[in-house]
Length: 74
Image 1 (spheres, rainbow, N blue to C red):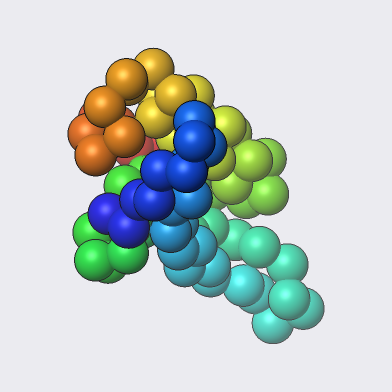
Image 2: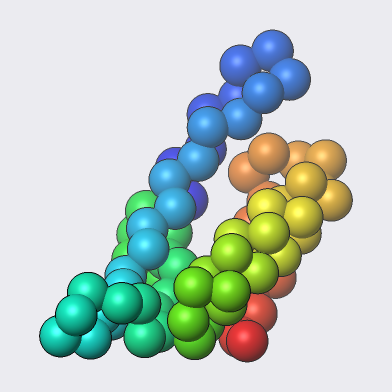
């Protein structure tokens, strides 16, 4: 995972792969790290928001900025 630590702050790369219907509405998707490893799958816009919140919350629990959060699937 691409993580940079600057004086107590972190930058990370989080990729959202989205499946949209013909009208452009979000159907489902997955979040991936910079290497393309799937971290979490979700359904719908609410699922996307929940996945990002859950991912960030689990990342904040780690004191080592190089340690990855546990992989989760929703």
